[in-house]
Length: 283
Image (cartoon, rainbow, N blue to C red; front, side):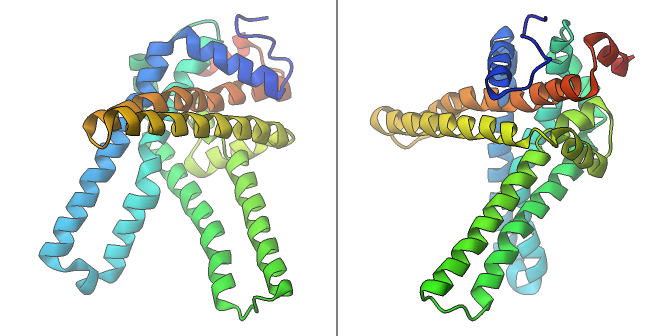
C-alpha cells in the first residue's frame, strides 16, 4: 500500500480521501497552479472581450461580418474559459502521476513534460466543449420551434426532454472526465484522448458522478460563503475579486486534482498496473 491508500479498490470514499491526501502533500504547488490558471483565464477572457468591443466599434464587424462576430463571441465566452484550465490540468496530471509513483516532479518539470501536449489538449477541449454546447442547444432549439402546447401533456414532454438532455450531458462530461491525464501521460491525440477517457471510465461512471456531485456541493458552499464575506467586508472592487479568487481556488484545487487521481486509480483497478509498470511510460 502506498502513502495515498490502497489503489486496488475504487470507491467514492477511497478516491476522495486519496485526492485529499494528494492535495495536502504539495499544497502550495497545487494551489498555486490552480490560482494561476484561474487568474490567467480571467485576464485572457477579459482582454479579448475588450479587444472585441474595440474591433466591433472600429470596424462595425457585427454588421459587415456577422458570422465572424458570432464566432468570436462563442469562442471567447464558451470555449476560451476552458482552454487555460485544460492546459494547466495537463501539467497537474503529470506532476500528480509522478507523485503517485512515489516520486515527485516539480511543476516546472511537469510544465516541460506537458508542453508538447498543449495542442492536443486544446483541440480535445474544443471538441468536448462544442459537443456539450450542441447537446444543450439543439434540444432547446427543438423545444422552441416545435408547436408544443403548454398544457399538462406539453409540460410533461418538455420536462422529459430537459431531463433527457441533462442525463446525456452529465454522462458525456463524466465519460470524458480523464481526457487530460490520458492525453499527457499516454500521449494520445485529441479524439483518441476522449476515446481513452470513455474507455477507462466505463463501468465506474456512477461512482465518478457521486464524487463530482459531492464536490459540486462543496464548491457551491465555498462560493456562497466567499461571496457573502466579500460583500460584507470588501464590497465591489479588486480586493473583493482577489479574495473570491483565492477562496474559490481551494475547492477548485481539489477538483482539479481529481481527474489525475481517478485516472491513476482506474488504470490500476482495470488494467492491473503497478507503479513500476506505470513508470515505464516516462522512460
